[in-house]
Image (tube, rainbow, N blue to C red; front, side):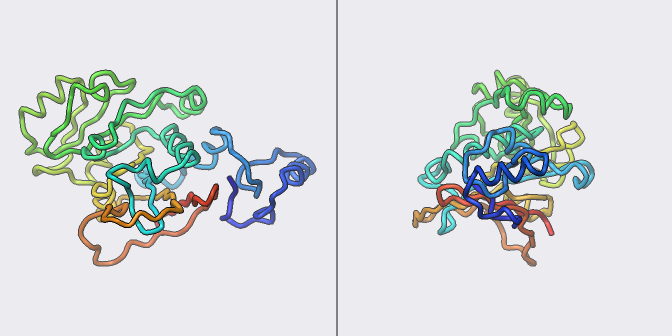
Length: 278
């Protein structure tokens, strides 16, 4: 893996020995993103993708993480895994290892077979220093609560799963969620969930480093509500054609939301980009 942006004097170097020698002469250690094409350790990726502590509005930062093919598909045959790669999964795991909560839509939970996040030793000290629990919570956004509450995601998570729904959600399903041990949060006056209210509600519970992994409809709702702070987008060097969804789906915005490029990594033709709100 190598860094393409931000551009530095070392960007584009291919020799690990030269890079290491330069770092030694400067009295430091060769770090990631300095041009060398090699696999990064998870701890180095965690430093690279650390949440911006001084920029989080009202203490909350919502980061999205998605993958897209060259022709704009966010899935192949209903799942994102076929268009991913090992480096993408390392970054996926790192972003989870940094988050307080992973916010996902109910359809994504069903399609991707979500399981409770596990504690990972590589992130343990970092999470403890940040005052975080051993693993991120999963926060599921669902209006209908049409979820299988017998799954381990609800019955045996390391950190209690949160279910975000509206005030008019079916009462029977609300009781089923609570009986399964989920932390039910009402974040909408009607049947659905208000995206901005959901973000605030999670922040009020101390879950301020947020990560959403979709699906496209949920990401579209966060974008339309103006609460997405950052997008980590993996561009997969594949073409799938078909009618797969894009990474965000919903009504067209009256004015396009402008983000600025923050960083780009590359490995095996995959681009790992990061954009922030301008």
